[in-house]
Image (cartoon, rainbow, N blue to C red; front, side):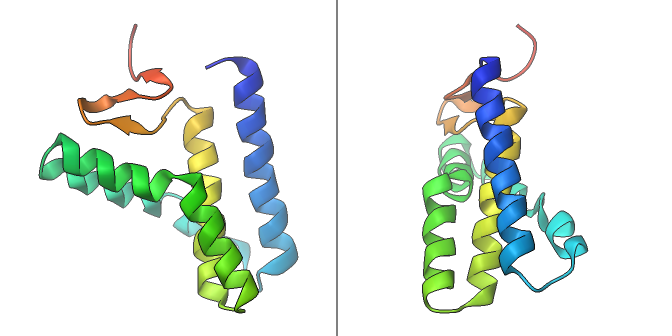
Length: 118
């Protein structure tokens, strides 16, 4: 992934931090404590690569995060706002480090390229 795309993801991560600061009443330790929870979706790989990829991609899709955030904001459902922000921030953070959405061929095959040594 090019440096420009990484910078874009850093900016999106910072946007999530700003939105959390502006709109969410919980202390920061909640945000940082939950930031890695979306990776629980990797447990789908225990079943098989296809299930793992579908579970991982659903949880790491920024569209899902944005929809949850919008629904939570519109209907004043604070847990949905929180979940949407954490999912969005986590997905941006993952992409900064080169972890993209997965192909069904295996965890290491992502839309950003192969994970690991080249």
